[in-house]
Image 1 (cartoon, helix red, strand yellow):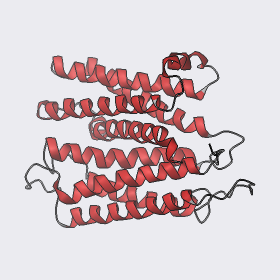
Image 2 (tube, helix red, strand yellow):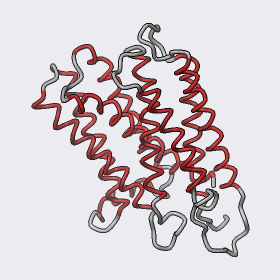
Image 3 (spheres, helix red, strand yellow):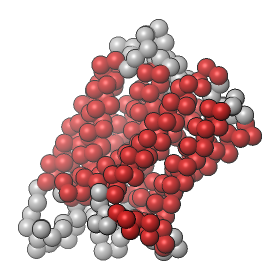
Length: 288
């Protein structure tokens, strides 16, 4: 199962990139205004992080390809292949994020130039995650072909987006700078994901899909990753609650993420990675 690490890294990094972009821009979109001059440095730095995460996700995916030089042919089947669409939307997302960062850097923010770039990047990111989820919903794989797959992928995007954005904002702009209480939102999202995994995770959730019996040798690795995911996310939610209780996001605090939020980021990221290994372990593969 650990041989699937390129796909696990690709999906988690890609979802983090899209989530951070969406969550950071959401309060500004709701208020109908662009990040002002006081946000310019944080905005550009965060877009650079999003672009780096997208590039890292693309790089990780190459380790899953037997012949990386043939990767250019993957875009030839846009009409019928979700893999081709996934790659296309990832490329478009990265390109629009780079365009948005360039526009924000070279001149003062203007609605005429930046709103279309923000909207295009957000739409491409959503389509990237949707294509990523749809790729695995194959008729022959009931463990993946159900609502759990897209819901899990989008929930991971929101969780990592909220935690990653809070880390970036506290490090670059300082605690309390964001109008949205991301720590509280992240706590709700992480708790929802723990409940979601406990109830609906295929094979190991209380109400999850139970695949038909198989003649392949039993592998208990997915169960271990499922449990690790729940424990790590639960610990992450505990440290989120601790951060809230101690006023880690108070505007009077000094700039920096603090120990509790750092542990949240590490635990939640590890939990999401464990969840992705659980996901890939649900489908048995021939042993080499």
